[in-house]
Image (tube, rainbow, N blue to C red):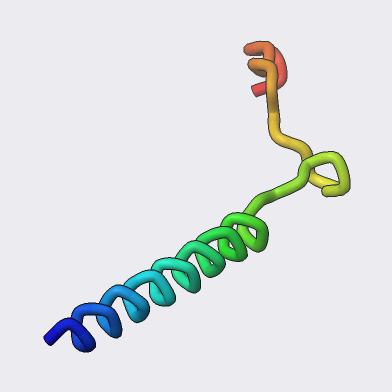
Amino acid sequence: MLTLFILGLIGWFTYRHFAKKKRKADRRNWRVDYRDASIRPITRRLPWKDL
């Protein structure tokens, strides 16, 4: 029983480790860096004459 408990803990920590690495990779892959992009977000309101 103690062996199963220890194996379960090792498995749980291993799973959490790889899940954390995957979340970090997803954040890095889905982040948009507007400094290098040709399209920049609009940060000001357009004047009504431009509409």
